[in-house]
Length: 125
Image (cartoon, rainbow, N blue to C red; front, side):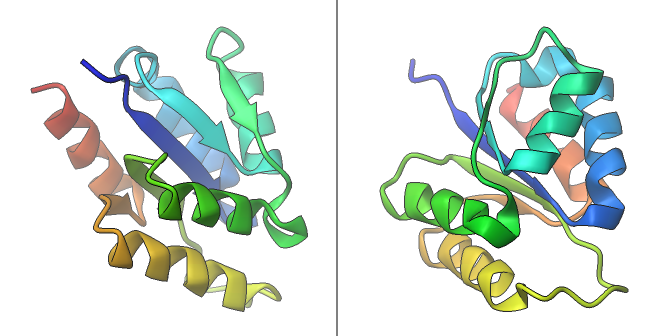
């Protein structure tokens, strides 16, 4: 069976929430190939040093587009993107493009912790 690939992205105000989420579900997430935008990946690795996370560029420096390209190439099976709806984001166009690709290519996308928890549960069988 193919090992699934999970992309992790979080806005600045949600990075700690993402790291806490991954810590809580570390055993469930461990079987995935993990890719993350730079800073988000760094926070996750600080909290879960035994997880193998491939860090891409920071979101505003192209990390969102790198993950978007991976989605378009069929290399991402699910996207966990913890969005902060209350703060302006200077690279909002990149964020919307990433979300649009997840929709176009019909991959599961969790935009908050509650949805991510349900997706993780669904992957367990």
